[in-house]
Image (tube, rainbow, N blue to C red):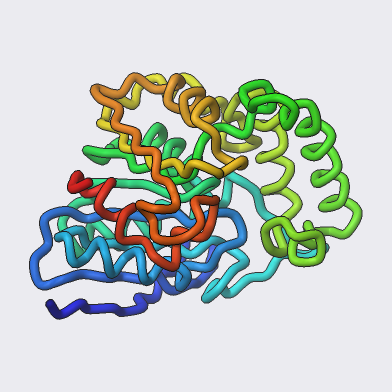
Length: 278
């Protein structure tokens, strides 16, 4: 099967520029808009998008502000938050998907991308039919298993403090994410501490989440400490989906380690689970 892979320029309303990864096969049954994990560039999902394209799912991979093809980089003088991600950037990629494929049938994401895909589904009027969440869930500290939960409040406050001190989170240096805008870390850590999706200039997203009734497909990994089932359940519990289908994949099914990121190199089983073939 021929797989078409192309990078399409996108410009947001505030002038931010990037290229979205658009991958499609010979037959297109559905269009998926995919939001990456924290600090992960769009190009890292090309193997996953190819697997989906072979299963009839055309995929538009968003590029987060500050990474990959983005025209911006976070620094002391360049900052942004959930407002820019949810109100400015993601809508531009949604527009690209709709103009290319007629409509967006599915929205989904990996880790933080799954959280923000859920928020996007809540905030948009033209909702997708399905929401796909891979290794994702709420970061709320109380829903994590012991003993991890007890260290999370300190970790959230520490990461927020580091981002404020350095002007941006030096993620590569500390082994968590990339160079992240301090506003993004502020909004993410607030959710981790409170369990609620509330952000300046976005507002309280919680009532909007309660209006989401689309089918939810989730994929979790057996040894992923960053996204336990309790975290996913808490996130889904904010919505009212017509159906929830969650697959728990182990190393033997994946053909690689069953952790937060290893699946991206051999994503066939994840594509099968999401496309309803596993």
